[in-house]
Image (cartoon, rainbow, N blue to C red; front, side, top):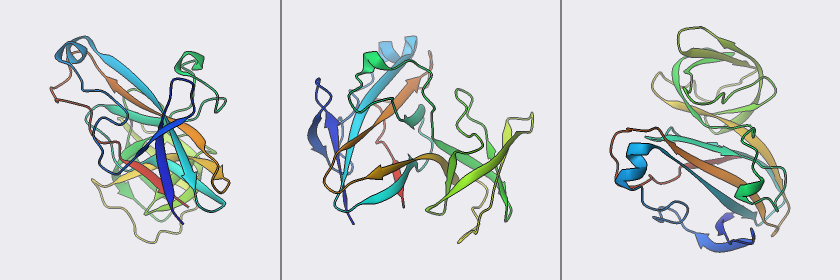
Length: 198
């Protein structure tokens, strides 16, 4: 099983293939002015599989700037069609874990976990049963988890959406990078650490 990834043309069809570690394939260099005033960059990605498969898509670890993945209503959507109410998914830092729940640090910008969503732990997807806000910046995410490896504090899990791929047929999803005004300096957006689990 193999996946290939593409960025998007202005007419929202697949464009050039994105190879691992390729700089500038999705987001342009972050300027000093964008860092000072704040910035939000959205980019549509395409994925193609060489077999029929249902996968989970999330992020393998948080980025220096807020980073998420999400689906839009249609593969034909452009950035102008996005409503801002799309459900976001991303990586969360583990505080502790048990056989049935993982405590994570909450994302300050978005709700990234909800009951009925999926969480990927040690490369395997699980449906979330409940999410409890502990009121201290942490969340307890409970699921029926048969851990291959219990995640350690400081490691990362990701919430994810499911996508069914048909052989050689492109499907789209979105990546977002959000920079708060006055954020610490980084010369450019970092490499997108997309996580794919099946």
